[in-house]
Length: 298
Image (tube, rainbow, N blue to C red; front, side, top):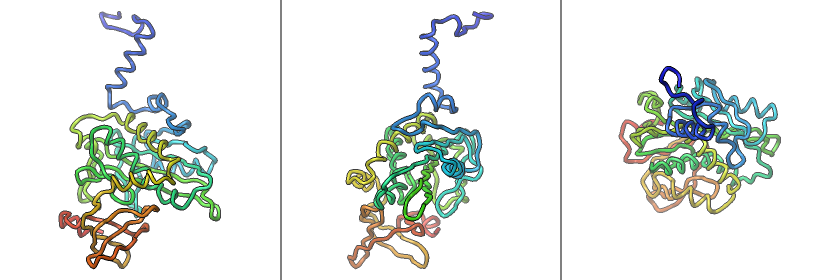
């Protein structure tokens, strides 16, 4: 005791470890390199961890490390990003102490075209499953976003480096809005945004969520060619069997989303009954019954 206060030196070491574990578990605000390292690696990922208080972009930093020879499974994490980005080079809002920003370096031998096409949705699926474990019903908004209650809560950005026709490495970047502070102003986004804690109405451990997302990526990573993952993708696909608007370069059409092809392209049923296949980075999808102000955004 010091001045009537309890100190760890008064307790046996096993009691100290137990107390610290409990404090760590029930302190959702604790997010540090030490805490993450104590829980990694998982499923062969995260053996090497680079943790930053602030970084421009975890994907950019991971790409630098990959070019320097960083191993498969290297994980880059930042408490905040100043130049995060998503699809179409849109900025991704990541204020400190409020969200997840992580990027994994993946080195894949003999990658099939189907498995490559599924990488983007792999990251989104991992987030959907992690949120489901917390009690949130989440879905994948094709091709790389996660939504809860109609609001985007996470986005995925996959980048690759090629040597001829061979993929040298892929960077799987994931951003998740966890706390209310991470939700950008409605006027600054192309789709309504949401956060994990808003859906749960309670606190969430960012470290625990991050490790669980990485774990689920690892579990599915070697199953990218399987029929199983395709069925799971379709099961959590947002707007399935609903009227949707598809927009792209010089294209605008309405149809019913019937599902996905094995390589994660959209199957759209037109009014005349014809089913067409659409995909590509320039394509965007919105539900027809979305609020008019949002539905007109491209």
